[in-house]
Image (cartoon, rainbow, N blue to C red):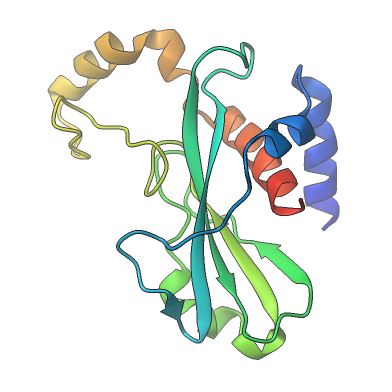
Length: 173
């Protein structure tokens, strides 16, 4: 808990806008996860898609969508846990299939898996005109032309931390 609080204070001190206001500006409604079951290991599964700035230095310019997947216990005890799995370029929901082995449903914890930019239910990020996820030698040139170097810099660990700060704020509304 200390690390998350410190992280939020640090992130809020280096970005030039209010993460709370941004989180609050997007209606916070959990819904069915398209293409996924509604229940996993006795948890109820739902998803939320949030709009965030593509570039946090220019928050009023372009935006992209990032998603969160939530597993709700049938007997919630008002405790939430963010599971930070995956990473920039890799979805954060990889542990959903074995979550009951890590956190038994009886604990009553609501578990939230944030997805990172351009993964899973977040805005897709293809390596070619067909949105392929397979990286080839031609992908580098395609991505540089599509996003420019400055645009590609927005898919970083730094942006992931900013996104996480907004996701945590949104989950507390």
